Image (tube, rainbow, N blue to C red; front, top):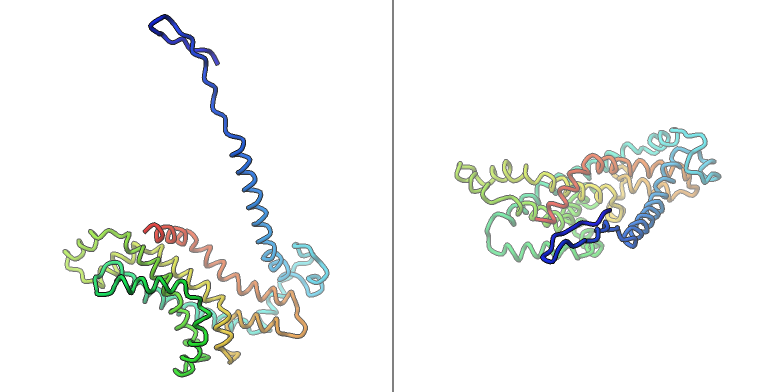
Length: 297
């Protein structure tokens, strides 16, 4: 670095060179500490999942005697035996039926409701919307007994339809919040242009608004499907017929046996978890975009 000469009224002045700014060491050290802490937290959080996957490919003896995450003699027999011997295919179909029906009804019902809250004008709209949002703070467990008593009076207790209705109702606050904000982000000029072209309200809803809020719809679908697939409490209370059990109940029956085979239990848990992981990975991009767009809206 050399000094610069600058002309001044009294002559030429020598200006000392500027030194390049240095990155604060404190900021770099802080980032390293945060990275180490988050990495350690990730390892601690992932270890139970990795142990579950490892145990699903171990024999009954190895899963008890070995602490290594890498099986010495990996085998698929535990997974196949668990799938066949415990009739997991029937439980899998029951879970798929309940989850798909709940997700479809949630998308259909609350996309229509959110469109009404966002675009249409009707008396009491603001109060009704605030009521739905207030339900976000009501714990679901407090409604368990009223649901069971009501469904018993209706004659649907113990059926899959008796599970779907409470699940759809429970997703209402979050679904309406996310979808209403997503619809609010759509310019009203598009609706006005469609009205000028002679489009009715349902056509505007189906051909203009729904395609533009697809990430939000996928987000709501994932936020509905994952808890429904993993739901245990209401399912345990409602279902008494083993032929209607879902996967979480089937997993619980394994834990109730006198002699628990941990490799079989972990294989069953892996069967329960894998479909949800694949579903999330396939829609991850839409999920993130939809969640960010709904919050910004």
